[in-house]
Amino acid sequence: MSNQIQLSRRKPFPWHIVVFLAPAVVVYSAVMSFPLLDSLRMSFFGSAAQGGQFVGVDNYRTLLTDEQWAPHFGRALRNNLFFFAIHMLIQNPLGLLLAALLDSRVLRGRGVYRTLLFAPTMLSFVIVGFVWQLILSPLWGIAPKLAKAFGFKYQAWLGLESTALPTLSLISVWQFVGIPMLLFTTALLSVPTELIEAARVDGASSWRIFWRIKFPLILPTVGIVTILTFIGNFNAFDLVYTVKGALGGPNFSTDLLGTLFYRTFFGFQLQASNFAMGTTIAVMIFLIILVGMLLYLFGWQRRVVSYEL
Image 1 (cartoon, rainbow, N blue to C red):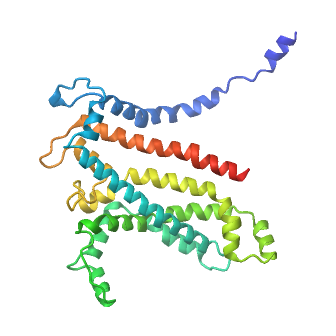
Image 2 (image 1 turned 30 degrees about the horizontal axis):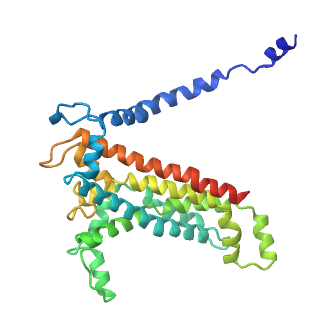
Image 3 (image 1 turned 30 degrees about the vertical axis):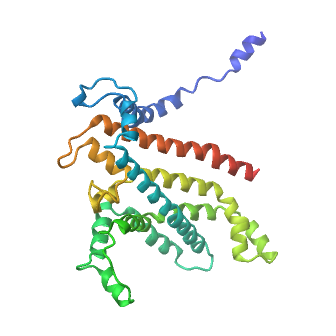
């Protein structure tokens, strides 16, 4: 009798959840999972010139050690790390600063400022690249005239190996600083006003309130912004391709992993396409992003949880 009662109390299987999730799972598998697994499979086979035979991890060994591939991969990886560092050290702190300023209750027109700061994010990479090329052009750009007006000697920042990548990084910061600003603003608005009012009654300054109350409460958002920046930067391609082309000029100084993959997989100018090495580079990009995700999940997130407890 008791067994029959237990069976009758069992909840029915939630088939409605399966029905609603099935289309999303099918589309995600077709668009993301299958191409990723197929790229992984292709990376273990040789190129068409090698007969497309199974070569195991030889493609990875070639990418990391061969004199023809290793320098290009190492340079692209270093450029990607520099690109990421600029965004972490400039874009995200600037986004946090803007969010803190726009969180002020005495500032009027905060919605207008947020819209204006977020607006470049919605622009096309082609538009952003073309406009900044015009601005920084040594022939008809505004930048040389402004530099001359302030007594500085202008150089073609996009044309020099030493300044091309930092310039592109700062252009990207200008375009996407609105995203961390918006995320930090949302997090700051969720901070309980009772805590802030209590701190003000105790005589705490605005600076102390921010660092002792607000910032610890938005640490989860800091982690999310960091991992989104990491993923976005190691997938970066459009801006570099628009401004400097697939070669990442001048002299590969702005070459990222995305541009290296593009000209390897699809071929560029006299360079024939190499599907095997292209998929190998794609898998390496995925592995780098996966390692960053794991560090976030098992490092930063656990630290934030322990801090909150």
